[in-house]
Figure 1 (tube, rainbow, N blue to C red):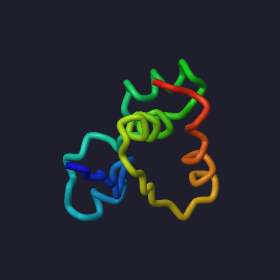
Figure 2 (figure 1 turned 180 degrees about the vertical axis):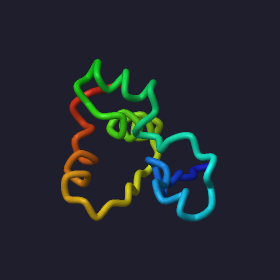
Figure 3 (figure 1 turned 120 degrees about the horizontal axis):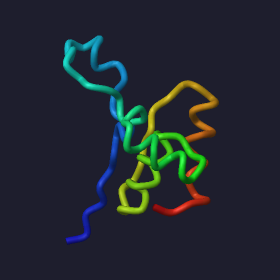
Figure 4 (figure 1 turned 120 degrees about the vertical axis):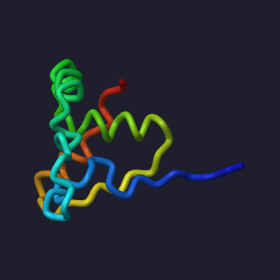
Length: 81
């Protein structure tokens, strides 16, 4: 089978609490393991998650209206996990 996997919200959904999911521990970019790995590569936790998914062959659709986040999301091609 030739199926392409699409990640609609590859960094989680920071608005989940507003939608009633009050027990959500943290959004993925703030995951302590991702942040530790990010320090090794001088990247953010978000960039670690995006790079990992990219290396798995997953199509990424990170959602943001923040121009700085857009730039950060594109800066995942200069390192490998």
